[in-house]
Length: 233
Ligand code: GRF
Image (cartoon, rainbow, N blue to C red; front, top):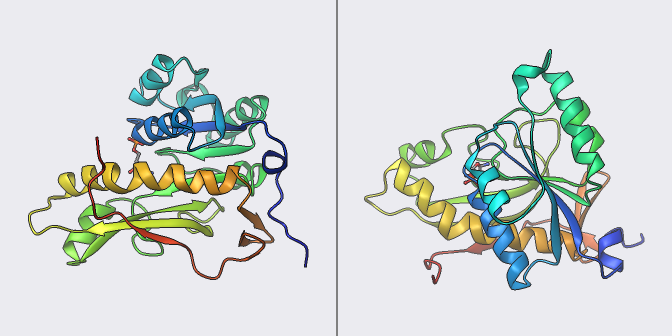
């Protein structure tokens, strides 16, 4: 079988074009911007787009001099209409990768299919555990020893797509849901997403026929990094 991990961005030297889609604080966006600036991620952000006009993530994008757009769901008849407009704006930016970074709306399957194979998300749990919301509370309630995050290709099923990479850290005895969520962000998510995106833009990893390929072979086990040490600031 031929190596399917060939991508236009892997073979040319041009930085991959990313469109980042978000609803909230944009801490993953900050990490992606930092990874591009430090040379860890050979990419440029062609557009940051949000469904919330006053998302902090949009302010971060503006401060970084990035192209931004916001679409207000209230201005559209229904989800399909909104997703259609969102998809048009994204497609106009000619992305190699569409990066969901805290996008808090369920995507229609037409949207997902349109960007299939280049649409990725970060979810704050060790999937398949804790799909959906309140992942930090659920990890604490279950007495888990570790908590983590997953970067995955997006499929129409919520938080169900094939995994690119995972990362985790130990849960501390005095962690509250808020403390755990913040620590997961700075200790795991902000390192994991740039690393996973580098896998993609460098052409090491791709999705073909529903399977993740890494370095020319089907990825049977998703790489898992332990991020137990706090990041050096
Ligand atoms: C992150 O926890 C991410 O895993 C989830 O939404 C949150 C977004 O945070 N999908 P931010 O907007 O990147 O700060």
